[in-house]
Amino acid sequence: MSLVTLSATELARKLAAREVSAVEVAREHLDAIFDRNADYGAFLHVCEEVAMDMAQSAQLRIDAGTAGPLAGVPIALKDNLSTRGIPTTCASRILEGYMPPYDATVVSKIREAGMVIVGKTNMDEFAMGTSTENSAFFPARNPVDVTRSPGGSSGGSAAAVAGFLSPLALGSDTGGSIRQPAALCGIVGFKPTYGRCSRYGLVAFASSLDQIGPLARTVEDAAVLSSLLTGPDLNENTSIQSGPTDVSTLKNGSLKGCRIGLPKQFFGDSMDAGVLSSVNLAIERFRAEGAEFVDLDLPSIQYGVTTYYIIAPAEASSNLGRFDGVRFGPQLEAAAGHIEMVERTRGQLFGHEVKARIMIGTYALSAGYYDAFYVKAIQVRDLMRTEFANAFESVDLVLGPTSPIPAFKLGELSGDPMALKLLDFCTIPANLLGAPAISIPCGHTNGLPVGLHLQADVGQDEKLLQYAFCAEQLLK
Ligand code: GLN
Image (cartoon, rainbow, N blue to C red; front, side, top):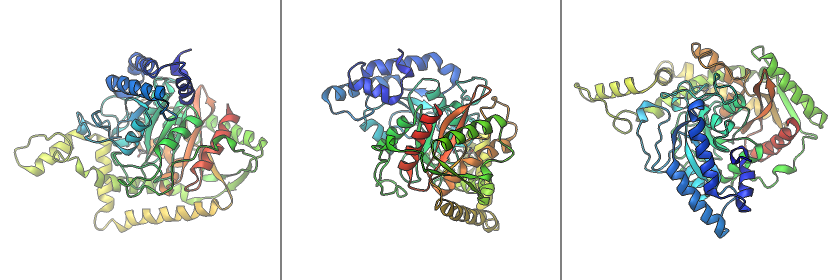
């Protein structure tokens, strides 16, 4: 059997039992990447030498009996995670050739765990997008159907995992960028509670919303990887004090008695009929298992996308100020001094969507508009917190589709930026709240995967993963 089709935990078991070596595992995955990356556009950079070195040292640790649970298992990293000595571009021309001098905390943890980094994955430029068509280099493609988008912005990570180029990948999620591509590619994507996974070394998009998390083919794989990456970090002042995600009881849960809320705002008219029937089938399956369903009315959800598109660009306009040809980015020559140099550098090296967001954010924060836009958005965010906190007094989970439509054709929606942005209405609330949420596979419509979205209250990552594990078994 081919090693690339095994899950991360199955690979880890074979590695620990010495049935395969870490070098063989790495070699097979690299061969698969060289074979199929041109079809999927999943990787921007493949680090063959680094991977083979890491595999060799992982094997030494496995042999010495000092290896952790995922030692020797390959992983792909979204290209906005800083990797010492490995290019990090955020799929932007402005960072082309940039080599970070340090590792993101999650990358250090991956090295400590003895995992094998195979490459950096394609994404929408600076994680701004929903289709990976905003990559400055080339779009990523959905392995289920390469004429379609894998979703975004972590589309390369999703394509790598769904296309059997890597059993695991990391993505970042600001408004749904881990969960939506996972849904469109038929895999699992998990966004932990804000602050559980250090953002140190993640190139910031919107700092109050960004969170790093795993893409995997099973809930167990996603959970085990999370347990290795989470925990407090002195380098990051929003990292919270709770310990690493505890997955020791992952398989002990049951949906019996689980109270699941169905906000009517997640089941609007924009939902594709095939997606709706897959989600309804899942609901019936869970009900048969003893789950109890509660109808919810959470009006703030309808303002989620608008609120997000004030807060995220506002934060981005400040975060992206550092790409000015002085601190970061190549310097484009200009005769008329510093200002013109910055204008040329940013004007020529940022893509269209990034520039649009910087302008929206600058506008929303400018004197005279600050109260009307930014302050209002913060108020809606507070309102949403109150509404969801009340809801979570009577439910354990909130359920909906991850995306209202399955994978769309490349180019199909790129002419209509509003249509793409509106797709995120089920995933954005978790970011505004800082809550944990996961997308798991939930059947197909016309041969295309459907994703089921489960969200828990802030801090309930362990409980969410337990329920998601049960749900996954029932939907298999
Ligand atoms: N699709 C959303 C956006 O374009 C979310 C992106 C993300 O989560 N990084 O901003």
